[in-house]
Amino acid sequence: EAGVAQSPRYKIIEKRQSVAFWCNPISGHATLYWYQQILGQGPKLLIQFQNNGVVDDSQLPKDRFSAERLKGVDSTLKIQPAKLEDSAVYLCASSLDRPYEQFFGPGTRLTVL
Amino acid sequence: RKEVEQDPGPFNVPEGATVAFNCTYSNSASQSFFWYRQDCRKEPKLLMSVYSSGNEDGRFTAQLNRASQYISLLIRDSKLSDSATYLCVVTPGGTDKLIFGTGTRLQVFP
Image (cartoon, rainbow over all chains, first blue to last red; front, side):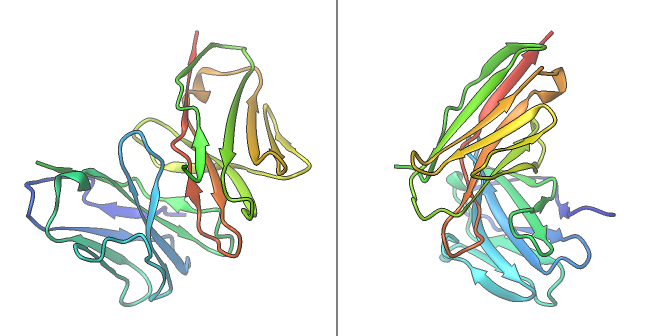
């Protein structure tokens, strides 16, 4: 079974630039999550989708971050404009019918200079 | 106060040692508890769930103390391959949202 796919794996940008990340969850997984993991910290949930609807985006900085999952399958997360403090690993995860068992992708390591 | 607190370590132990990690959570309404494992520069993976009665999976034992809002993970007969960061995870009551601790780093040496 293929795992969660993410791209790109690494991205370096300058502050105030824009960046987008892509995620393709495990086939059949209705729930998709985006997390931000800053070095030395645990993952922090940014947004949760159930199919193509948003379940929880309470911790998404909506002035600069946006996410969509238009067809209920793959998803994109965008940051515009980026700040230095956005440097982190952005993890995508999906789950089937047990929300606590989330399968994570390899992440995108973002460096903002 | 953080919702989930862990000693970041690192815990440096020799092969064969027994090591225990602790975690405390602040929300008394938290319902479910888990340990995830994250290898260096890799993604987190579910290690085990934590039940009030305690549960064991091979060399790993997890315990929950709701009264003290405390979770533990015990690893017996440590292997080099156990070297990783162990993340304590809690779900607040009424949601399936996962709240991760900062993780405890374990390094097992020969």
